[in-house]
Image (cartoon, rainbow, N blue to C red):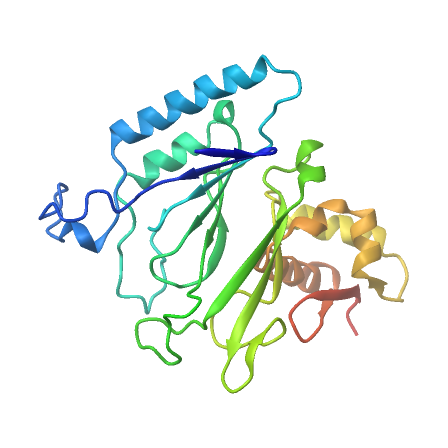
Length: 273
């Protein structure tokens, strides 16, 4: 565990049980086919974080704003119909429950393993956001085990917003994709993968947001997305799937729509023509 400014990093070796033969679970898969975190490790992490938080609380100028957990294996199964691999970390559910306890802070998790990029939230309103990272170099185009592109992600934490305790965690992700014959690009959209830009942090109802947008756009003239974010600040923390669902609600319930640019980034919102 390392503290840098207001951020605490926890690195978990989810491969620690590899090499010990068959799985300890009832499943017959070898241990090397999945990761694991033991109950003892979870208890030790909880104890250490609790004690460290108590020590920091005694120092008026010391406060952890956000925690970042880095591990190799999935906290959840990928869930894709075409993905034959189900090697989620054993004990991950208990780990998520632990990271959802606000007494030890709020969390953002980064992991790899299957190289299928995904960004999602867990465990209601206090669970960690999770970035399942793509592969920087191992994935091959048209790999039957992974249709995703080679991608690299740049995460920007919104420390100001988090210190205001409005949204925890909060930030944005820029993704660069390896385009065949073109090299690395921030604007290339291929099969699979994360879009070039997305945010994270919002956990509320897209139905409420759609109603709020409808209340704030009274003219037939489209409103720029930047202006709309000034009116409704939480729009800045929607991730790409939430934006898709928000747009569906706007179209179906209010005859409005979000206009996206070529990189799937919102540019305007207004009445549907």
